[in-house]
Length: 167
Image (cartoon, rainbow, N blue to C red; front, side, top):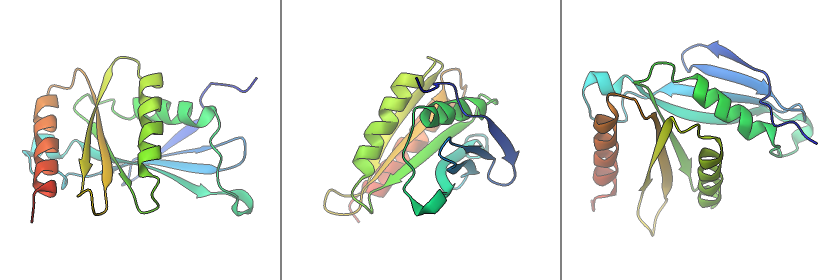
């Protein structure tokens, strides 16, 4: 039976707060928490704690698409839990619909969140864009004990309202 333990991962840090791990299929993944203070029109104590979560396969052997295994989502969940050691931090991820698969990815992320959430985190979703144009499914993950959570929620909702307003 395949292991449901996370792969061994390393925190390399750097400008993007990068983590790396290698799957049993030798796919190298990078999970970044890019500082994204510019996303919210909010006071500095809120803006400086916003990070964009980016998951990228940076090496795939023989140009084959990386098939997710049971350990990959477990590892990503462990990394997401490892990063916000400072309880004021939030992670925002954006799923663009350029290939028409953003909704499927959103469902997968929702499933992962429900399955791996240790009850210490919450997720707030927004959709950016118009029904007839490009759509972006976004979510913000934050710790329940985050003292700034209402400020983040307000800023996130205000951003969506502004972005989605008729031009």
